[in-house]
Amino acid sequence: MPEGHSVHRIARQFEAHFVGHRVTASSPQGRFAAGAAELDGLTVTDAQAVGKQLFLEFAADESAPRKWLRVHLGIYGAWDFAGDVSMDASAAAARGRIGQTGMKGVDAATQGAGTRGENEDSLASIGAPRRTRLRMAETEKETDLTEFPPPPVGQVRVRLLTDTAVADLRGPTACEVLLPEEVAFAIAKLGPDPLVDGGQASEDRFTETVRAKRTPIGLLLMDQSVVAGIGNVYRAELLFRARLNPHTPGNTLPDDVARALWRDWTHLLNIGVQTGQMLTMDDLDPEAYARALAHRDDRHWVYHRAGLPCRVCGTHIALEIAAARKLYWCPSCQA
DNA sequence: TAATTATGACGAC
DNA sequence: TCGTCCTAATTAC
Image (cartoon, rainbow, N blue to C red; front, side, top):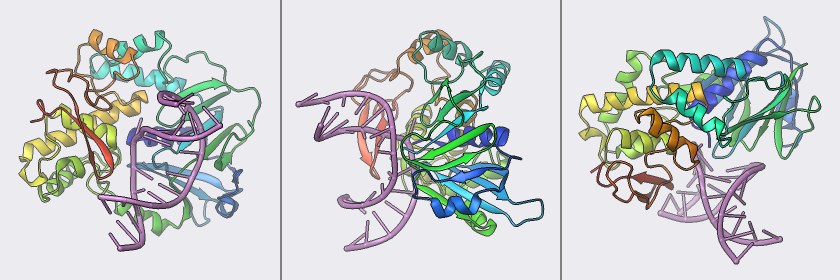
């Protein structure tokens, strides 16, 4: 369910509140009892996000061999953090950064949505109690915490507990303990992630891969070996922003069009990591953007808008099933 | 109360 | 292309 931006935010949580801490690992649900036993009592030594996958490194001490936990949330997995895990500081810092980089509209728009009390992000939570529960899935929500550690709710596959913070994992499509070389292999199968390596080499690699295949660009953007981290929402929105027909074969894309797609993904991913939301209409003027964000289903150009009029030309947004996923696009703007 | 839905990915035909 | 796995929230009845 979460696309790349959420996984990077989750990794940031682990960096801030778990790395350097010894953890008690358990599987309240029982389905990961053996894996949890392997990690129990170890110290978290690193947290990395690559595309939609999270990698946590553990070790008994400085010189001990490393063990890794690989987690993929799949379509509805989620991490719940509780304890001293407030995102206030980073959220506030992110807002400052957005203002500085001049992404028009984002700041005012997210605050506008917050005052209406309809947003699910954590940006409006300044001053919240120190101990909070933070849900990090497709949406993020903070609530007060009355006891620590809180009792596990629902199907918790893994619980990682430090003295002051707890992380609960539920519904992952992948959750396994790996050796370092197995982690390297898993990462090697993934395409470039702008937040892992945002250099020219990544842009070149993406561009060359896309332009070598006859596969439609709408499928290539979802292929994690072509580019890691894009999911169904960002796919539809990136294609609309580029005014690109999803069926366009990769090998017919001009070099500059492919590069522009990579750069726009980098741009949207950065906004997503900073705000915790898939904000894709940042090129609207601030007032129009704030209005759009105020309504839950009004955040995107085309995603989840089948049959509704295109925001630009009024044509009904099309919906088709491509590789078992819903693909939304404007047949007129993306002709 | 049941059915539907979801921002994924894999393996079997 | 289809079925399968994983879970919870929302919507329909």
